[in-house]
Length: 423
View 1 (spheres, helix red, strand yellow):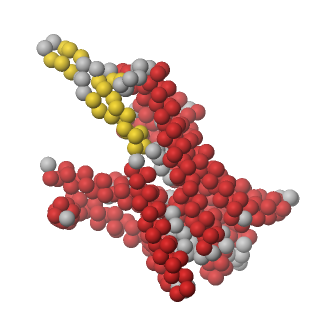
View 2 (cartoon, rainbow, N blue to C red):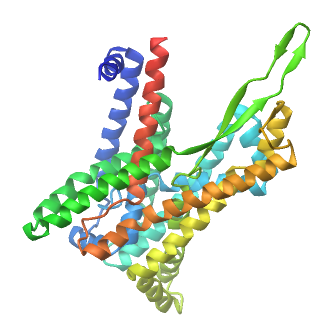
View 3 (cartoon, rainbow, N blue to C red):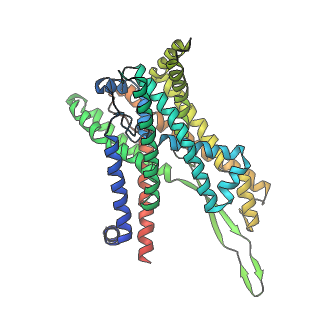
């Protein structure tokens, strides 16, 4: 307790840390103000009903930072930038030049890579804005707009997304933690009061055991998410001794940390993008009155309304994308070569090909456990709502994973800043 008080005192007394914390808080205030400004022509009653009947848009609302629920000028949130970043990371697999820029050119290469992601964000934001607004206009959520007003709304929404991307980058540079993640986290936290109010309004004394069980399950699942987020397999690594003149180098033993869930929430974003794509394309085609699209759009809509089929597809996609993304980001051959070049080896495993095979088998087993857990937590809210019949009871899900990851990251960064000031 004394250590905690001492660290909090340093945070509030040290000017540099205090300014960083205040900058984050100021940026979040700006974000929440923008998220409260709706675009023109929104029917709030139809919008609320539409969101209640669409679990998929509820998930997308998380990645918009809560701006999609009231169709604010930042309704897309940082979603286009996240999608662009993921596409750029996948492009490194197909383009050796992009891979060289991202991994081998240091800080200059990473800055150039980020600039490419920003450039890709703009067309993706335009496409998403057109798709969403077309969907909402077809559903009667936005009505009475002329073509000019529709185009103006697209420009407003795209500008809001680009502005939010800029705010997120400022938070990363001048604040504490990853700005994009903090914006999403702020949207999740901002939705808690309304959820609690709705739960209290619909409170039924006959369901007290259900609420108690829900509270216990929430605490248990939150603990499990924290443990699984932090879990890692430490692979021992030994550096061979080298004698140079009268001095001996090496001979030390360290470890290679391999996280149980190396992909984070990226597979969930992949899965949501894949599930969103058919619906978005059909809405774009429907706006141009393409023949045969109406029947296909009805089939896709019925699929999303079937919670069992939707949850099964969501589970499988998260599972597959976890393996895919881990395979893209973790290369056993490169790790084995780097260890061999540095004169390091894993005890009991020969350097080179054997080390690569060992790491490959190990990361496959770890990814299997992490992928199953990630997919289970992702679809858990749907399962709880089906079992309990109460839409406000939603344990787990993407929101919990993001919230836990962001809180752990902020605490770790604050602790490192405090430690730096102490020494």
